Amino acid sequence: MRETPRAEPPQPRPHRAEAHTAGASCSGTPHRSDGRPPHTPRGARQPGPPGRPGTTPPVPGRPALFSALVALAVVTWQVLVHGPLARLDERVSRSLVDTVPRWLSELASDLGNLTVALPVLAAAMAYAVFRGRRRQALSAGLAMASVPLLVVPLKEWTARPGPLEPWAHGYYPSGHTATAMVAYFGAAWLVSRRLVPVAAVLTAVTGTGLVLRGFHWPLDVVASGCLGFLILGISSASPRSGRSRRRSSSRTPTG
Image (cartoon, rainbow, N blue to C red; front, top):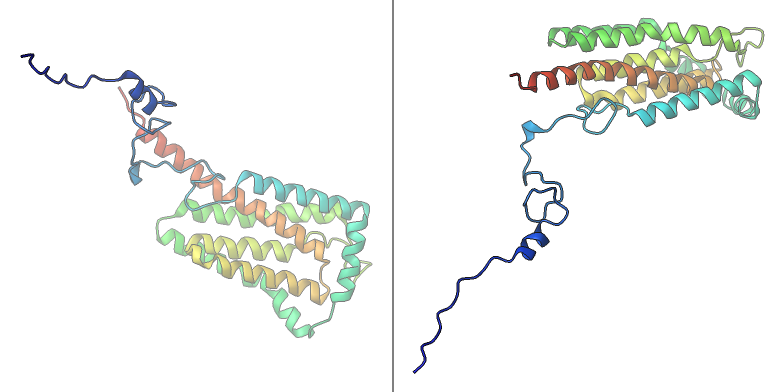
């Protein structure tokens, strides 16, 4: 009587292993195409470079800053050549001036005065220094100092007359709008990111008041918004790039 053959142990099948590791870089990890461990510890995650996703807190990215620069250049060109955009801007402005009581539009435009905006930023800088964030406070102060250095030459170069004072020149861009934007957003950046919507509202109210009162054309305010965006984006990215470099150097093994 013939004996029943014993069952042979299962043999490894190379083609099955290859199917699981297809696309992996010699990692041997099933269903992983990049060879990374299945769970990345939070502490090991590196922030992205400034202006790109991954930066904490987020700052304007390079495409956004480039778009703001292009918009500022196009608006400035239209103002210089008195193009169709500038002519439309003048028609819109004439239809908006004095559509609200003057005391209200003047109150809104006063939010861009240095006597109002600068103390807000100074208080936020003092708070940041108290919390040990001296570099961020210095960056916000330099951003505010750069406003007149950029606005004044643009005013002299464009020499745009005002809506209510055509004999006067130097209305483009709006210094009040740029001052309000850099001061209020800078203060929010130093104190709490939850205050960013408040900074946006204060800046928008300032620009709207300037247009409704006839102190500036709408494009003056738009150009200052682009300029303020560029200033804030560059100033908020600089301290974080330095800190990212220090972190990467501290993690580099020595031997």
